[in-house]
Image (cartoon, rainbow over all chains, first blue to last red; front, side, top):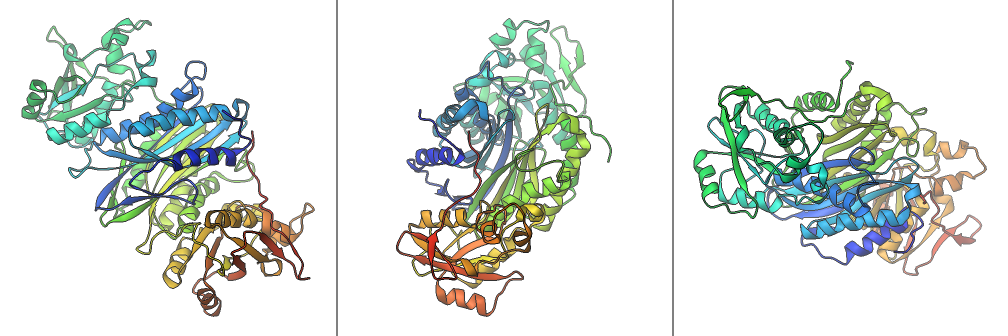
Length: 310
Length: 310
């Protein structure tokens, strides 16, 4: 990796790389005032942004530049997956810590670009800045809904089964850097069943289920015993139980969705995905949110989860 | 302005404000995993991002929160204008300096929102973070090309007139915070004439003209005497001439475009805009870039302009 002296050299380097690829939907990529992406059919564009901050969302001591670049795109891919949409094109805003040098920026962009290639996402633009502040990377992802429409948070109905992909908890042990965004899984589910509501688990199962319930104006009963608990949640230290990790840890980036019981049963009988699908509870008309324990006792389901505060 | 305790309160506050408005193209705004924007006809989406950094792109000592928020959107509107496109919807990523508190963030978003309303841009999503680092705001703007297509940098042809809106130089004296992005002007020009190439002047006239020339593989001769020099450029202190300010200062956010001479003459005879339009030179087949002085002498046109370096 050669040393690039300034922002323009970095953009040129990125442009040469992205220019070597062809993407059927991209009419104009890096090198103009905006990117241009074809929408040849009537469609619904999906737009999402995530900002990753050095020392907040990642630690340079614990993650490589490539891992950070990968994650910056992966979290946005997970948001598009949550709508059962198709990702198309990304733009990247970066503020580079001057002391890190251009090779760090190049490695970060390579990590991002590699994941973009895997999901057929074009890297179509960016704004590159170098400063004395901590490292910041902001990715905005443009996608589109399928012919079946985008799956919202607001469509859960009383009687729906609550289902989840994969296993939950303990993501900080490593999954948060290497998770596979559930883009293909969401598209597959959207083809096979009528998804009433969906979200990706970024704030934690309990908190994200509350987002669905709040938007859908319904309640839920979750079976504590049914929650698929990850190995990392079982081995995590720090005083919380494995169940608490599965309920409260963020950054699982699994899909949490609701379907009617017939569709739910079909998914359990013949799971069309390469990842597990588990029924963890049911949507209720009553607005309360319960956790039902093996003993038969109920406790309130609390939307805990980390949040930024002033 | 009440004090909001955390990021969720800030998002809720913004959501209530944006929820009160209706935008014909927005199917889903703040409150889901992504925003959803209708593209009811085959179209070309335009996408652009800009990052503003405290101490780099603005100084909190010299600009209010509202001015900074306004500028964060205005620079993106200017990029959509440069394509002669229509802006549609924006997402905002912010990293808030914890010491500034939520009222600062609210004022910033109010400044952004006010300009968004003026340009019929929906604020459809965001990622809000609070940290101990300096303040960062990143705006991504989605727009669309008109039926006539997006105007690229690459279409300048030998013989074209080089034209510019408004007057140039000295933007840092104030214009950079209050400029009106030339969205309507660009759409009007696109209706009236065949725009061959266009860019907005953000790096400075000389540098941005070079972007057009590089992308179009042509040269240019610019008449020094013809350049419309702003009052701020004339009164600026610091050792540079007014002409140098007009050529080299960034952030004018005027339109720089090329048209064939017939179209150029039509614009001069009956300017359809509320802002001046000036012919400043001509595109040449020969790749050289000249500045022609009143004396008849030529000097090289140098693409100076500020850039971030490592």
